[in-house]
Figure 1 (cartoon, helix red, strand yellow):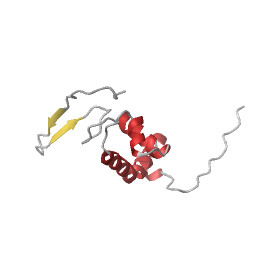
Figure 2: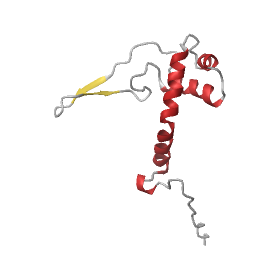
Figure 3: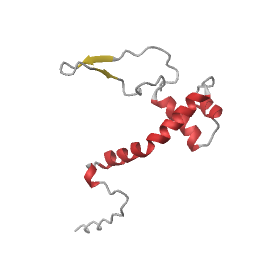
Length: 117
């Protein structure tokens, strides 16, 4: 868990020889442009959205007692804006379906498995 970590994370950056743009290779526990890791943000969002705690109580549950309420509001707003696409993509990924096979809200009926002999 990254709750106790308060240090510097070295980020590898690469330069594309074709377009001359840099690309950052972030560790898997970080999110672009955010100072807090996935675990901390997830703890806050679960407390705020799932358990319906106040912003202050949700921040305390994520071990961020001194966190400004604006940051919590930002996290909630950003999550709500992106959640539908995130979970749609996650469902497709977990099921291993290509995008063109996603049921798109239609009821799918699968035939029963053949009885074993």
